Length: 332
Image (tube, rainbow, N blue to C red; front, side, top):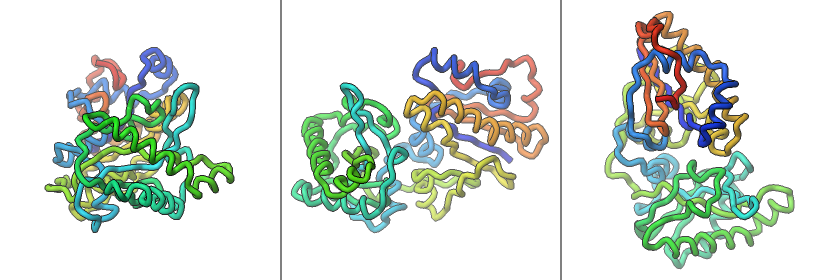
């Protein structure tokens, strides 16, 4: 029996800051597992692209994948995710915040999308709020642009992350018009009056054609995780991801878990949150995984850090390779 833990956002952009955080971390299970295991280089990619590859997909077109799970009867065509965001002025830049910085009801989301549809119907655009925080945009055709993934833009100045390509300037103008429409919407008037952040933009990303030409292959294992993409990858084959428990559960079969504890700290540049995420992983997942491996209840533990392009597999016999030093995920 094998345990595979996928841990996104395991790197810190500033090497000096990462070193300072690492000095404060108490994570003996993490560094022992990495130090004793066999390191396997993998293509450095977003965690979404890595998940897609695990399920046999060469392309992580997030919008059509999650759309099939959210709205299976949606019209065929080219769809983008167009998730609601709050752009916060920060000196001379605009920083993007997601739903962790604000609450939004389905009625508010539907009202905002209806307002956008009134303005952009002539362009052939259709906005749909599948959930309060998961919106979609259907386009008349593939725009032929490169869009920045949501996680890559979160907490950052968006000016340099806008769509790129031949028609980029038109899309920059369209996004400005969308922001103006949202700014003037009664839903946002009510939110601002109530002291809530306005939903003052959408973020287009993850585009692709719905329905997909081929569906993911579902591996024969238990899958744990709360992310919409993970659920969508399984949904296409009639399977379900199990909710992520607080800590490593008793295992009855091969298991894959997507662990998001580092996300907020890494994406918002919050060193304390990133530190706390590592400590939570150590206590709830890594130390129990090491103990389970030591007593023979599982045959191996695999730790994958997608953005670092690294995966480590540890078998029980390798735990006694005392000559191999403890390592951090970002160490060569």
